[in-house]
Image (cartoon, rainbow, N blue to C red; front, side):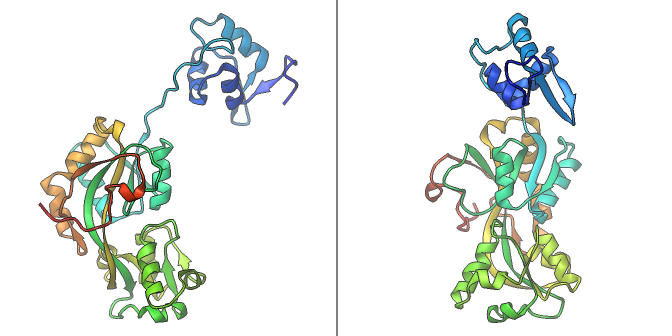
Length: 308
């Protein structure tokens, strides 16, 4: 960048935000009010001296000598980030059928999905297990109690755990919550999960794992019973877990979120879940506030809930 004393000094969006003492998102709002800028290589660049002159004369505009306005946060896009679980697929399909606002889908494991919610890029994230120790104020929408385990080609039982090091394993990355079921089972028979996964193919979703096994690209995979049933695969259970969505609490009143919640609480959605092997609706549609506190005290437990 040129010297700040130069009339040709050009600032990036973050630099002009620091100069005017505003949030970077507010810079784009100022552009609509006439903030001087140039488009170069797909980016906005701001002439420093012109920005300062504009800030001095623009009515109500933030300047380097004026207090910064409170940061404004744009609402997240109507997107749901999850790992392709059939419960999510059914939820979005039923939500659309009932005429609620449309919600798009982003494929992401639970760690990435939560990060997208935390950064305000998506409205909701698929989640199972306990939340990290530090997280923003969230509400959990329970969808289903699901069974997860090992899948194998039709007519062939999944191999015993001791044989996994010699099998072509399709698994999930460490950031996927379902991995802990397999990792704990491997430790239980004296195997190191890292060693077993060194030769495994790590895939993005239960669907991808099940499809890899169905195509003969893997001997065994880690996935839900629901996906095993969808593709006619053999299945051996490793565990059960509650699965649902986490949503920023301040977004609960938005029409898109209301539509998701009403759909999850409806009879039609419950009926669709009962028709999928490996799913138990139970408390489907139940909303639970998760305070920003340590994960050990979080109410998002993996323990099985009793049905009302």
